[in-house]
Length: 273
Ligand code: NAP
Image (spheres, rainbow, N blue to C red):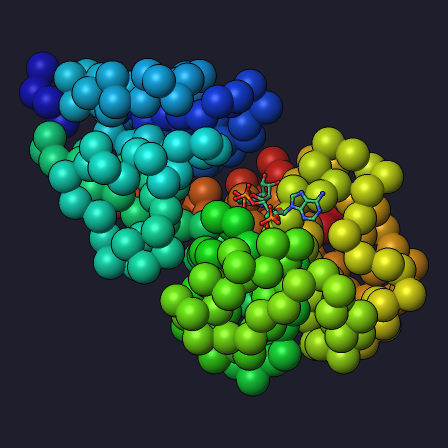
């Protein structure tokens, strides 16, 4: 049996990792393309102190692709052989591809956010409020500015917003200025507010209008309080699950070299329902 005939292993690593949808999402893709005998997708819980050993394991076992999630997206960069330029700019890796023993780091979060937005709107020239200044915000702001959108970041810790604004060239402020978001075309929540809590929202309902698009990166629950309020106000909404889907589709291509079967994957994520 030659190397190319061996089943290729892909996986997700994170801590915790239990509720990750990526294993099922990629497996749905393998089945839709009839390549489930050539690829298998697993998950492993990797504690921060074991991250280097886990990366050695990718090399040792010849694992083809690894999706990296919290809290490893920055730390993992120092153990890789090469970081693609975009991931370097964003300062985080969520995807590792093993090219004949050489581990290359990519970031597909920004593509996930941009593709999710593009399903509903053009980005160029739009005034976009990004709430939050963590890892997800960095990828999202990078993507929007690359597409010609105009961003203002609002964050609890103003210094963190300022740092991203300086890296990518946009406005920034703290949460005292959040009432300004009523004048923006698009509002994006990139904080973890609402994650696992259907009663929490970063935005007062009265700041949302019917001509706006509201995008929440939080994907659990699928319909957050913010999105519920936006819907009630007649605004367009974009689910965090859409971003997960499109960033996963890009990873699928990097791991298999094949276009992801997006309709099958979309159905699995129940987007639009
Ligand atoms: P992170 O780096 O830890 O950043 C968290 C951000 O949330 C910071 O800006 C933080 O503000 C803010 N925040 C947290 N609690 C807050 C509170 N009580 N009040 C005000 N601000 C608060 O996390 P991350 O990696 O950016 O992830 C953020 C969320 O996005 C997570 O829920 C993650 O699961 C989700 N995510 C979704 C996708 C997707 O594909 N849908 C992809 C990546 C991440 P400070 O700076 O002031 O601390």
